[in-house]
Length: 116
Image 1 (cartoon, rainbow, N blue to C red):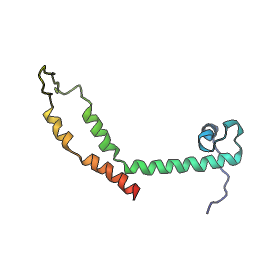
Image 2: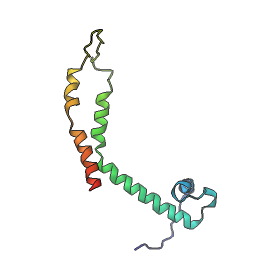
Image 3: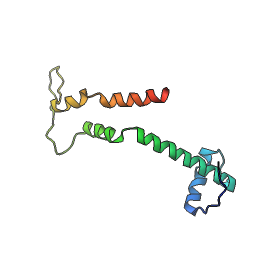
Image 4: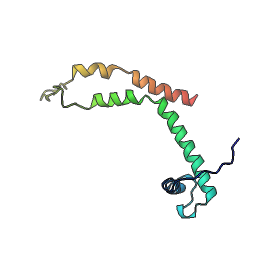
């Protein structure tokens, strides 16, 4: 159960909470009372908790490495010249990365777990 405590909030944090009041509780920042600050604090901390748990579930390191695999690096010699013929050029070294669907499967599993 919630416990009533008095906590001193720094001015910059109070300004931030007031700036979020329109989004969180639908009140303009100039009309926010002390009780509203408490509500804002609780809701924003709850949002942070939810976002933190989502960040733990999503494999950001895997996502980042996948995105970086798509971006050509300046240090490699993987330059492909476009032919005038009908055949499209491919990078054989990146083909194995494209065929690896484990990231897609992991991402799909996350959404299936949430739906269940």
